[in-house]
Length: 463
Image (cartoon, rainbow, N blue to C red):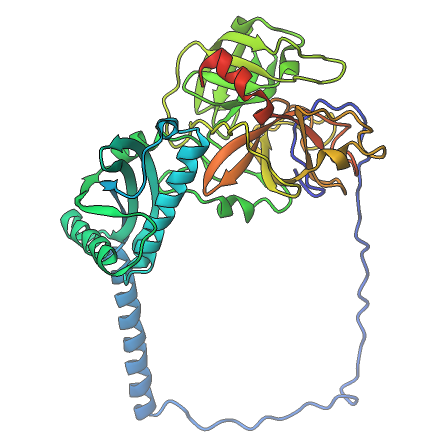
């Protein structure tokens, strides 16, 4: 992606024009003027400025500035902010537990979790120390005779000089005050509330039970806005772990062929057309991380499953699963993406993000560094217009890009993820499938619509 803004992704064959521009250069010819035209000006000398009183005042000012600077530096060195994590457990009495709350990919779990997380955010952000609250994530919803029990992680930033216990007391005070004075949508049973300090490793292990969560190397959440700001025209991903579900599928001896998405410790989701030339899993490897070489993690493939009704000629059912021979451990750099509920429907012009290692111009070379771009969903009706794809888009396909072109997937990104952010939880909504050339006007990228294949994925993987 550069200049004209392209993400690499599809196997497209048409040649693209190469644009170039040159700046003209001009010569500067010196012009001579006579001293008579511009007579020399004489300037009167100033009187001596540095008398003893002024020297003393200047010295005091310098000392004051140095003192203030030392104070600021001391503040940031001594009171450097540090991350603190707590595991909160409590009961909610005005909501009855539903069976689907036990499935973290279910619509019911997602909506209820968001409600609880929003409530926690309001409680802490409206308090006097609200700027210290960073994020909360629901880990588990379980049944209770009086309603249901909540287990969640709370994240804060406080000066490193603060003690864990002192911060714990502050958090409890804020929460108990809110329970007394504020009308909350959910009724928390105060005696049931417990708060336990946990370290970053325990916090990461707990979050690993949730999909689609991005974390920085400092174990802090990476909000969606951080990507939006840096992908105005498509560019290299800057942060390790920014897209931790991205996979590079490589043929041994031939290098990178396609992208894929990690959906569990052992399963990858990709495009069926990636295996047209070779379906032997022993000939493939999968790598993780923002660079192909060197990879953060590497695994061999043990199984490849193509959709039974994949049609090469029409690109229908362009979806496949690949199983790793050895499971991967989730971390800040390797994480699974969430699979959407089959009922999810994204309206046109929804912002989605596409990533991959493919070429940045038609038939260009593979990129060693992962690239990313923001695109928008396009309705099937628009995409099926005669001047666009003329009826070729089926119910299992999703169009995304821009009608004016410029931002798109290209060769080498096939099989890679198209993801959607919902409250900083990321969902895989599309698989890079096909398109006419790269970034042409009225020829947006076409993706396999993941919601259409949720039952098929579940039947093969149990996910």
